Image (tube, rainbow, N blue to C red; front, side, top):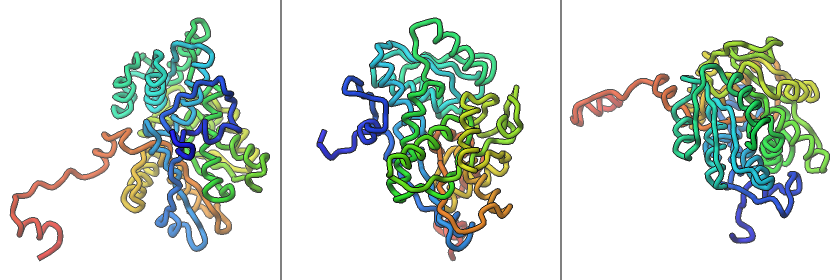
Length: 355
């Protein structure tokens, strides 16, 4: 590889990560995702506001999980592990399976039966993971994974694995590198809560290193039907169309609350209707296709704006955690089917508004 070629997040941010020369770097050249100016959203908020979209759907397996997985799999290989395991609502399984395939080790995935978007499940299967659908939700699957990995020589690669958080924090580094500072506010979805934990950790480390002078307020959003942090207690049967954040008992609950409190931010909830409105707005006005869970960030931004939360113009970054093609069924249900028409030029011109 050329000396100046991009080599993935571990190579780019090695000095901020717990790796050494002995760490076998397993990478698919993740990271380096675009920070897209959101002109329509900026106008919606008003004069002086700058809204940006951190489009994590352009990672190799289509979600932010790849940032953490390159670290988790690399460290598992360094420790001599031959197998990794995770519970997943979809994105983690896709990422774990891809990076395990890259490393030449076994990947085992437990998913909640009937609750996974097919776009994500297909990825885990094509990468040769052993995928088992259990009766129960994500939290039940994670409990089983924790028990199994505690007793057998299998590495857990959910966000309980601290190396996952280390990799995911690099998203905040990239935002600061582009903006030349931390944003005033960062808005993001909250499911298992590892990502809000990771970004806050990254911002603090960049400030400590003198890379930036400021820290953002962290604004997290759960789906109303899966909002344990907002409600203050675990949700036994979480339900939302945003499958990636359909989690009733987040593994990083306390860390997410710490990020909220230390930054002077908040964690709130948005409805499925608000998520779908943001989903369609992003695709229709910004040209960005993100999965529904991603759009909880934009839904939350719009909700806060309407409430008058933002008192003065600010730089705001919304994290879009996964690509829209992760859940094609939802997109199809949301839009109208193509109109059938005869191959007649007059009919076509009439249908598109021309005479």
